[in-house]
Every structure is written in C-alpha cells, then in structure tokens.
Image: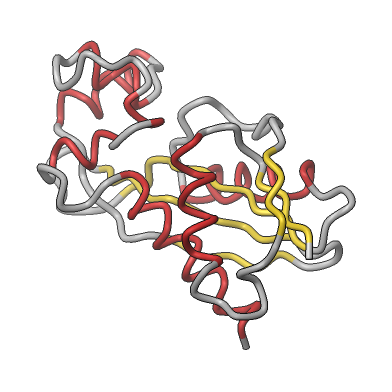
Length: 173
C-alpha cells in the first residue's frame, strides 16, 4: 500500500507514520512526502478555509497511491473566547473519489498571537516568534506553539495525530 502526505513538515510526516502503526491494514504502507500548496492563505482564518486547504493538499498529492493525506491548521471563530478564535487542525484523506475528514481538538493562542495573525497577516510561526513565545521561526515544525503553551503536555505532533485519528475513522470502518 502506498500513502502520500502533502507536506514536507517533519512533524506532520512523523505524526502520520506513528498513527498508521495503530491500523493493521495500514501499518506496512510506504509513505511518500510531497510538497504541494494548500491553495488557501498561509494562515487560514475559518473552518471552511482550513478544511479547504487540507482537501486541496490531499487532492494535489494523490498520485500513484491508495490514499493521500492533507493536513492544515487554521483559526476558527469560537464565541466566548478571549480573542474570538481558536486553532484547529484538519486532516483530509483522499482515496481518488472521496474525502474523509477529521479534526483535532481546538485551542486558543494568546491574544497577542491571535492579533498578529488576524491584523498583521502573520502565520502562527511568525506571530509566536514576534510575540516572544519562541526563538524558533519554524516552531510549527517542532513542538508548535501549542507545545509551548501546554508546557509539552500537547505537542504539535500529538495535536496533528488527533486530526489524523478522527479522519481514519472513515477508512477503518
């Protein structure tokens, strides 16, 4: 079995490989990493845009494989939060004809970070750096801002695995 992942981000690739081990029919799959664009903004600002980005990635990566995975994180509006927004990760699996979607839990970034993303157009990496939460300009390819904010209790990889796990419900059943 061949699986393509529409990302060169090592966190996303490792998350997928680890999740596949939990599924007998997928654990021996060969995983190929393909760099494709999401077709949405660098920092999606709605659930629709986030899911569209994941679907676009999965569709563009579908070539000579059984399944392709597209993973996209973005902001969604959530009432009663401090900033009005939370971050969520979407995973779209494409099998050549259908999409199978899953989402992670959602979490709220510090207001300053959200403001930099919404008002200055920065992505979460840039906003976390500019707000002083990290000195890593590619924190999303490491523990992620969620890892910093939870003090390692929920890392970007584990957060990504949540979205992969919920999208695999459709493949597993």
